[in-house]
Length: 100
Image (cartoon, rainbow, N blue to C red):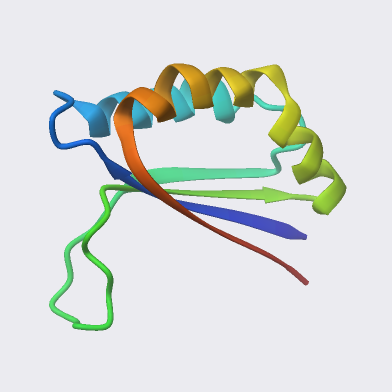
């Protein structure tokens, strides 16, 4: 299994950026071929200091292997998400990829 975790910080000057990002991920990323598991949502506040609460949205995608994730990166739906949703709505992103 290959996990692709993406943490998004939205642009504060873009109205409804969080909602646009969530809707765009659902529209463009969830149906991408090779995605075995899709989970996207808003940051949850916590009383624990160890929990990062600076971001707005997190995405967790699971693929069969790195090759499937590599194909996803070039898929037209992913490219559309980057151009139409990510770039207009986000000021920062961090990606964590790992496999077992």
